[in-house]
Length: 120
View 1 (spheres, rainbow, N blue to C red):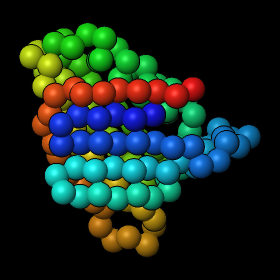
View 2 (view 1 turned 90 degrees about the horizontal axis):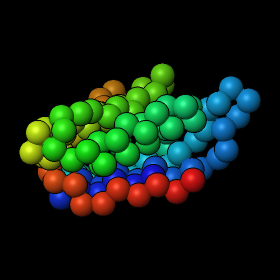
View 3 (view 1 turned 180 degrees about the vertical axis):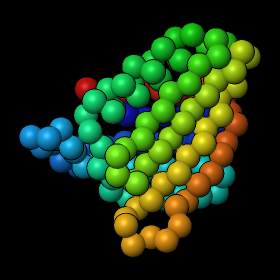
View 4 (view 1 turned 90 degrees about the vertical axis):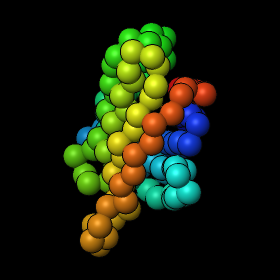
């Protein structure tokens, strides 16, 4: 899954298939406001499918206030995207590559939609 907006690029690439408990490893690549990072995160398939559905709805209804959120039970990733009535996209994101990291990398961006793509 890839989201590209002015000032924000986020890509989720499968690293391993989901296990019997629905947990899968993803490589998260993100660039925003001069920060670029890549790390492995654990997410459940249903979290990704829900986020995809919320993003698709937002993308198809530009100009309708809405939100989409992707977060895991693990502290790896928390991405909240909000769209206002004029189609401006705001992202509040916190990333944590592993349990040893004392601080999470957090950032905000306000942008316009550029590209949204999904691979299934």
